[in-house]
Length: 189
Image 1: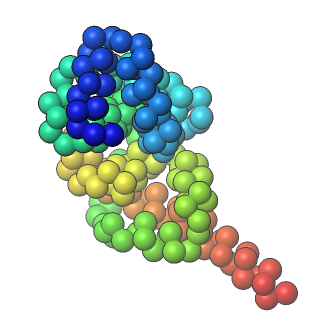
Image 2 (image 1 turned 90 degrees about the vertical axis):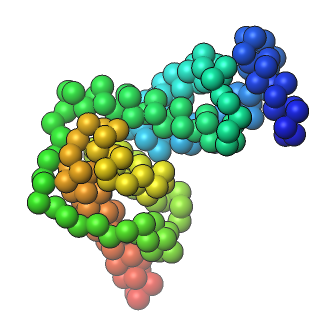
């Protein structure tokens, strides 16, 4: 989409023009649903986050300054909406808080694990992580946030962020190792 087309589309959305809103939705819905699903505990939860996020997009599109991509701006709204939902749910669930965990393996984890299993399998494994692990893992690995930023966003300590990331990685590594061993045993027979 060209710059002028995008400006016209944004202007239409600001004016609550249904055709413009439908076009914006059609352009970004599949990518943004994938973002929401990454941060959700179920498809239904992802749908709620997705719809809530798009409502925020339409409500606040007048604040889009054109700095950066429209897609990136929408993605940030979706991630923030998922974080808000997580924080609300967090009030009901105790969060693991192990300050002494200082393990930080770096962003190479995703590359290593992706070389061993398909992306779809990885997303399914991540989706099965406990909510606190999944949220920190996604923010760190996929959004590129640092532990300090994650701690501020989720209202947890940096130590908790590091601990939850470490536990998420360990859990994923154990599942992948088990699957690889199982595949090896099948091939060896």
